[in-house]
Amino acid sequence: MGDQESSSSLSPTSATLAGTPTDLAIPVSLKFIISNLKNIIPHSLTPENYAIWRIQIFQHLSANGYADHLTGKTIPPADTTSQEHDRWHLIDNNLISALFSTISPALLPYVITSTIAQEVWSILECRLQSTSHSRVIQLKNELHHVQMNNLTKQQYLSQIKNLVDNIAASGATIDPEDIVLYILNGLPSTYNSFKTAIRTSPSLPILIISTHYSAVRRYT
Image (cartoon, rainbow, N blue to C red; front, side, top):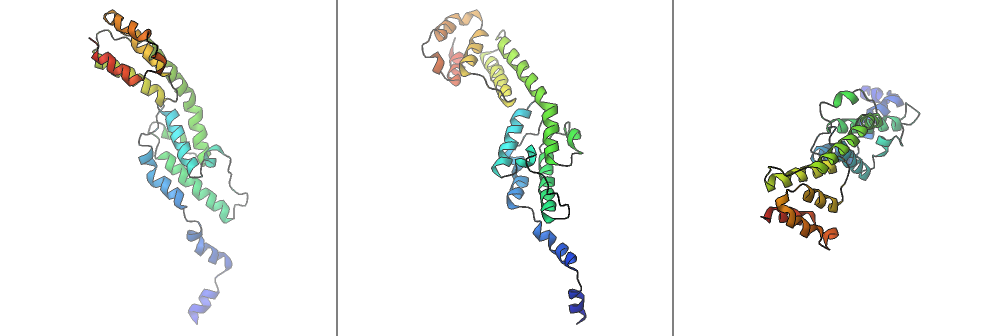
């Protein structure tokens, strides 16, 4: 009887709170994000890879229905006593933790005090977007002036490929035909006949970059 009286004396509020952990369980899709984000995005965010990191994060969260937490399109319910309000913050706080796990230690101090995921997203955008654009300009300038000089063929082509890959990682692209021209422009005069043959080729617009990498390696 005593146990029954004790049980029946619980207030409705207490009963609701007792059920809260179940009611506010982390959604399965969010658990998947938390568990797999580091595998999907293995490289921590740095100023150099912001553009590609941003695309990967947004695409992954969008595919699972959480991108609105980044853009601010979803806001917490006004009733701070409601379970919907608590559920919104539960999801948002877990998204913040997921984002933090992909940010390098050098950048983490800028966002560590953020209280919502949208704030993390906005701070990173403000700090890194212009940096990313400047890096693209710098890399394209390096690519424009790259020269073979005393490099081996392998070293020269690796240098160009590294610049092209870094430009792509910064969120920009280069036309394949332009890459071919950069390769040719940086070759010494001993490659003049090869350069002439490539430049006058009617198939230049559709040639594949890997083919040119191989062609330069074979040329003697």
